[in-house]
Every structure is written in C-alpha cells, then in structure tokens.
Length: 285
Image (cartoon, rainbow, N blue to C red):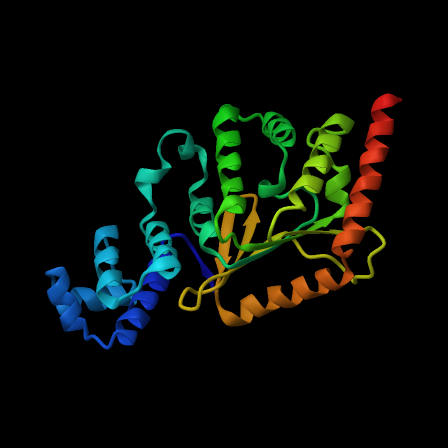
C-alpha cells in the first residue's frame, strides 16, 4: 500500500505506541503527562489525529527515549506534521511530496538508491544542477540549488547513513540539455571525490551488464529499529512511499539484482576515470 506524507502520522503513532509499551506505561498515564484524555492518546497512536512536536518531545522524554532514536522520531514527527515552519523561504520550492523524504534522509541508517537516466540529487555537482534546473525552465534556480546543496549535509553528519548508489552508464552520458562535455567532466570528477567519503558507495551499471531488464528509479531507506523502513518511487506527478513488507521486499530483491550486475567499487573508479578522459578529449576536439 502506498503511503503519502499525511500517512506518516500512522507510522509515528505506531512508533510512539512501541515506545510507551517498552516504558511499561498505560495510555492513561501518558494522558496525565500531556494533560489530555486517554482517548486522545489512543487517537495519536492510531494515527487518527496529529500531534504537536512539543508533545512528541515530552512523550519521548517520559519514555526514556533519547539520542539518535529520539532524533529519528522527532524527524518523523516533523514529516507527519508537514513541517510547515521549516518549508518557508528558499526551502518553499521543495515539492510537498518530497518533503517527507528530505526530512527522513538524515535519520536513516542505510540508503540504497538506483538511477537509470540521471545523476541522483546528492551526487550532483553544482554545474550539473545549474544546467538541469535551467533546462527545466525553473524560475527560482538559486533556491533549488541551495536546497540540493543542503541535502549534501547528510554526508557530513558525525554518523552519516551508509549511502549506496547504483547509477546506470546511461546517466553518465546523458547531460542535461544534450551534449555538454564540460558539465559531464565536472560531474564525473565530483563523483570521484564523493566516492572517497566515509560511507558513500558508488557503483556503475554498465551497458554490458547481464540483466533481463532494469526497473524505474527507486530509493530504499532503512531506519533505527522502531522506525519503519520504506521505498520511495518518484514519478512525473509526484512521489510514492511504499512501506508494506511485501512491496518493500520486491524492491530489495530488485536492488540485489542490480548490485550483483554492477561494477565493484574499484572497477567503478576505473570506469569513471576512463570516462573523464573521454570528456577531456571531447573538450579539446
């Protein structure tokens, strides 16, 4: 079953219920802490109503949930609430259906993403971003670039998620707007730099890879124990979040097939270095 931004409330409620049970507290005891009725606590846990961020923080403190686990659940709470305050100014250009993704990306413990025809956002060089947004005809290119650069902060966290990328060879040939050797050379050199970072793994799926077919782009996100894993699939009209186990497993299986056919890390570096030389030659022609 697909879940939307608003359905994050159900996931949050489920996590809060698990935390309450682990703390051996009743709904009535939680209601007394929050100054509300037991019925409202029940609705919060079922996802029937929203919950203020301050109340979530109080509940987590009461349950003894702290550290990374607390931060992960607070991010989920912001996503469930739509996080209106954080989406003003230059961040307002981020589509509403992508906000849950960007809220939860830093809280993940592992992210596995596949892209067939374009370079994924966190790996894009600034030159590539500018070209892409310009070709789209975007009216607020500066804000779009700032948001995309903000996402790169995930790599600089004290404990960043293990971020694993599989990129089709096609994405390394298809420059935004058509042939642009300078843009693609800059992009490939950027990939080589990022591949040296802790917990960033880049693998190229070459045209000659042995696969029956390749799927559409998707991203798998895994979280700390009590936060539900999900798959994100983007399309022309928005994005879909899939968290039912049977759906999730289908994408894990697809990832495993792609990873088995993709180049190993050192092979990918050699492949990228060879492509960089090709683009340098094209610029000199």
